[in-house]
Image 1 (cartoon, one colour):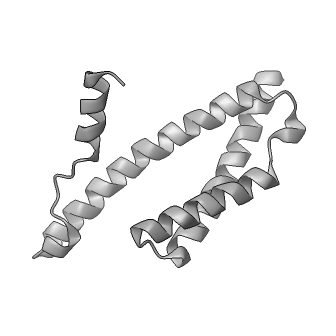
Image 2 (cartoon, rainbow, N blue to C red):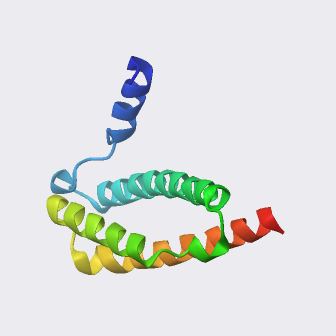
Length: 115
């Protein structure tokens, strides 16, 4: 990875808001939540880009929904959630809904590009 890209990734991972344990006021908490939301939007937008790529690459509409891949993603996310101390009660429904929305989006893109 070139140095510029590596520095950009490091900068994107740095947080301006205080760590949760260091928050003293609700303004601190809200600043952290707002910062995380901005990061999540950027990451989800990038994930959506991969759905565009998948719709472009997959040869038939019948392979857009892939149950084995859904289960693999959930297993990967569960392991990562455990590693980071994220409650599975939060992570699982978020990822299930995001995947369903991404699959619906991919179907729409697949249809629009093959129509």
